[in-house]
Image (tube, rainbow, N blue to C red; front, side, top):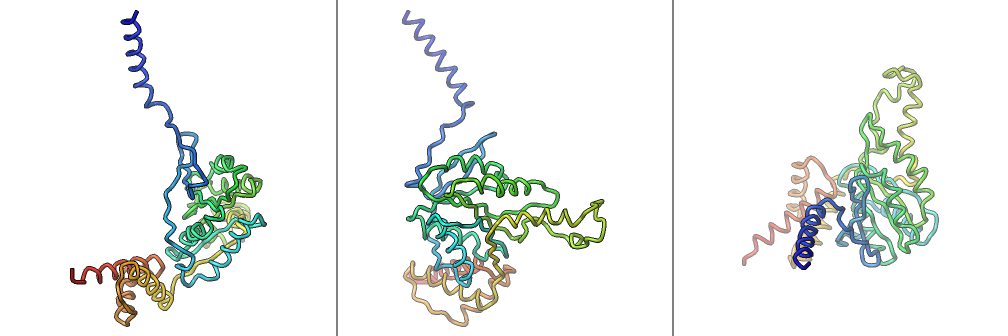
Length: 296
């Protein structure tokens, strides 16, 4: 009997070893009292929230020259946290101007008040109702964050988001809001022919209605915030801020000089863009170089 039992157990272990890789992995439950952010991960036909270790280094005071946008989104977020009426928000404009940083800075500012962030990719927006289902009756307040949201010409996915914003999110619990960033104001490509309402464009009998269908997506966001390219003065002020931050952390004594401004301007010219991301990268380069030049 012992020999039979032993053989049976060995065979069962062999079968389980072959079946185990085919079984879905056990997903950890997100402890929102400790976890500040998560990302929606697609898993086959379903998905799950994956906890993230986030850095809260970026503060609202680090965002230079975007005071109006910071104040408006900050007020909207405080309304949301206090259970007052608040709007879904679309942050659109030039790349590297602080759109995503503003959302993450708000998390750092209000995490203690119960704000939580959930990142969701554009391709997974159809899963928003599933995400919302997991947040019902939780005490925290959740911003669903879709970074770099846009749709190419001919894609129909934008209609999914339209229906989601009109339906599931607006009827979702009051502790859920959507913030999105995009380089496009209307999230979809706009053509010169879109304005030629009197023409029959590509066989479209009522071209103006097709245009309205496209731009109606961005109208679902109650709050629009625009971000524009930096001028030279704005760019150099941001450089000064980040150089000061990194220098203070490293104990480096420095002062803003004309030479520093010239080097920063050349750096931006070489990158072909003056924005906050470029200023941040130059500051890291310049402070690191100065520290490397110090005697050991």
